[in-house]
Length: 334
Ligand SMILES: Cc1cc2nc3c(=O)[nH]c(=O)nc-3n(C[C@H](O)[C@H](O)[C@H](O)COP(=O)(O)O)c2cc1C
Image (cartoon, rainbow, N blue to C red):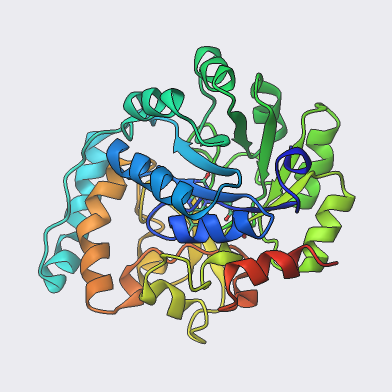
């Protein structure tokens, strides 16, 4: 896929929550890679504004990533219990835990908007859109990419132009179809296993940080490498200063998968909140995301990384402040 759309086999991962700015996506696309915007947690209007802003900065292809609506069978009592557990911590921060809101991330409105005028690529995470949605986007000329984390999901992901394989090492949310941690395969195991069951182009994501990593994964049959964490500290990234600084803070020595912040497995730096609450958080996405949001905001405002979701993949130590265009060139240089 990438070979057709872009000069270089480098995809900048969509990163919701701030990092994926129009400046970052455009810099990557202008350098010959594929830049990505992220619709997650944004309004439809903000998503459209990001597309317009990126089109001002590049005439090259770029992508938009969409969250599938949550299918979690949520236990309100478990969410309420987690909310109560966090109340003293919230009080210390001068806020109250949040209350759960919409679970669909405005999916229908975002799809209607994207179908009316899509960017070159539209990718999905947390599930597989209906054949109608895939067809409508393709009819408007968009390339459709589905994120999968297992062989079983790859088998169920039909109708797309390419699959994005996300290994267990990846930073941020695991893009699995359901809120489970089944089949936690590392990328180098997942790629050959999926290759056996499909001929679709495969974009590989998870723990990739260097030109050697990229060359290695391409040699296993991926058409492109998708990197998120590696771009977090670029000057064009919209990651918060607290997040950027934490990636080089010697206090943080490892990453772990946790539901503590959002109710869905996601990989981040092991900080106090993650260590204290991973055992308590219910599998309830996005309800837990809403509950913890005021605490995370207040911690970030107070400059305290220990109360913030510091999403990062296992290769977080390799991040640099290199401008995104130079990073794309370097990653493709092996
Ligand atoms: C801060 C952050 C936010 C992310 N947000 C999204 C997102 O909105 N949509 C998505 O499909 N993947 C998201 N991801 C996962 C990436 O698409 C990708 O799988 C991951 O970054 C690859 O692993 P790496 O971080 O080790 O490079 C996010 C990753 C990070 C680090």
